[in-house]
Image 1 (cartoon, rainbow, N blue to C red):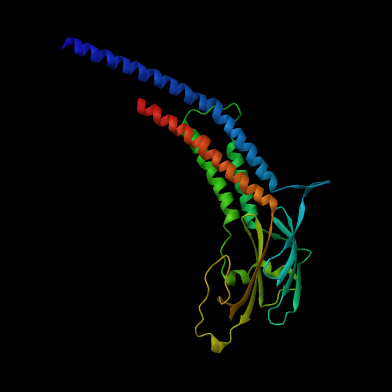
Image 2 (image 1 turned 120 degrees about the vertical axis):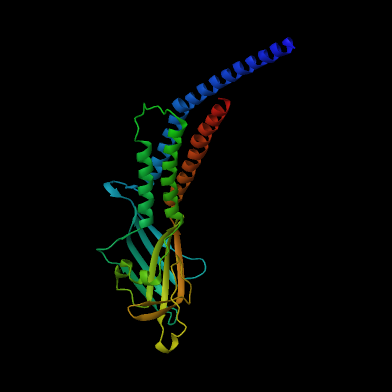
Length: 298
């Protein structure tokens, strides 16, 4: 009986010693992660986001302090009712040259931005701001700073991932607008000659594409408005959508959408994806996994 008890005590002592040794090894490994691996991954993440931020403000060759201007041809493989050339400089459309073929008469109307006007693309501006906020979070500590806990790392990564997710969402999710909001938009006042009352346009970003939507309208006569139902908010409204503006009821008769690919926006989205994966895999999973093992042993 005593022999059995001594044997059990001996086994317990061995298990305790093994647990202590394993705990020590895990603790050393986790400390190495905090001291060596985390700073290396943060540096890699910072470099990627600097490259993403640079895409939003590409300099113009030979012109110091000026952003690069790029011309993009709008087109569609299925129609030629709308054609145009857009000039993009950073987050601003500095020129838009648009030809619209009127559905009823086949007459071609030409519009261009006034010389004193440019249109800020809020989606690009917001995405750039979120990237810069993520960079500020990553550079807020001195290079010699050592993280003390996994929770501290996770808190930083959660904040960085939030900014990156917001940046990506601004480029992948265009804002919904009602037709009266679009009619009242300052965009309608940017063209020469002025847009007629039966035409509306909208610019937006969808992923790596710069999109132009043209709405042709007709006025609903008083005797045809008994079934009038105002359309809600949407990125793209369909023919038949109705709305009221300045005490006049309208119906959308034709919708034309054309687009062009902006290569540097595609690059930026790739950088966002890589950065988010880096946050999730390298900084969130490893420390949490090691911590959970460590505390289970204790």
